[in-house]
Image (cartoon, rainbow, N blue to C red; front, side, top):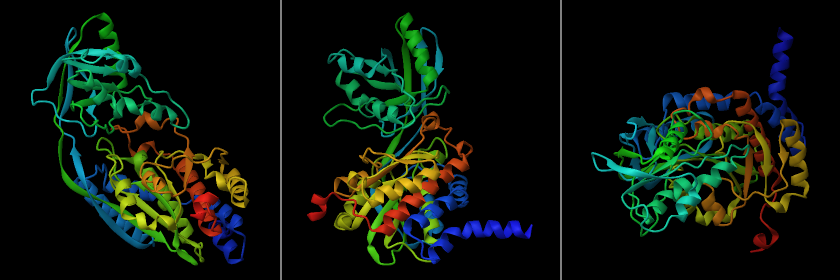
Length: 462
């Protein structure tokens, strides 16, 4: 038994021992990856967040508690320069929500308001529906054709490993309410952007267009969208929709912690995830898992007796779902953009990473070759497609010229529970979560230790 215990301890200490012996960055990264596969930090972080805080809608008391929790947790884990950065926002608070078919077959529908939606009158909106099986059909409807109608779009989202089906359908939720309003609709319903067949609707934010009437909007569970299709095929369908959300001025916070670089502390590799969540579940996969992954990866690197050359900055963003935190961070740190060598965001759930995308400029150099070698034993590969996007909260930095990386996770079942009441801790597979931690730790260490320039030569020259 003593030999087994010693062997386990030596295995856990392998990356630190390797570094102390003067190993090359590739060897340390590889051993960090192996250590990440069994490190308990991410799972413990996620369990604590979802249990002690639960849902964390930005601008609410729960988010205030989450920010304090995160600040304390980063300090406990030994991060440096831990602090909160406040920013103003509009808090949208969900109220009651219901929908009911009045005729021809009275029955309730499972719906949830879209984030940012206006409320209906207190007694609801009662109207006949105009059902469109595709979003293109709605867009083809002429102006005025939906007067006094509730527009319903029932197009289905495609399941895919990389989550691309969600991106393809996002305009249906984001822009759909305003497009329906342009055609005279008094309210808007869509099939949830999800790949499940449960009677749990998926929420998510909308974006009202300027100069267009704002109408209440909600998502239907997928079985209820199917039900409306069948009813509409038989003749006119009349429903009543009741939504009572409110909005108020509020604030939230981006929570920051760092692993200070030993040689170039002002040169930053920024990794982040969003701490806020929707209010229906406990935000386990979206995005507690992302918070756990980047925190766990940075914590592993922080345990090295010799920190990497660059500083690793962890940012837990405080209002991604309603699109406030990324813009606030970019604005506050615009003067620092030239010092941020690379940014990456984890917002794709808790499954393993299967591919890493980096700026094209490093594909064929030593960094790309080393990264590919380190990723292979972890079950991931270096994608030859360059990173185009990392996440909503790093997008503001990217627009200012910061290079980004994208660590692609298996999202095949992510949209089964995404933005629903079913986004809870029991959906997390700790082994897959740890595989993501392992890939992030190895990748981030290489980016911070090697000092690689991720900007194109023309941009770097400027």
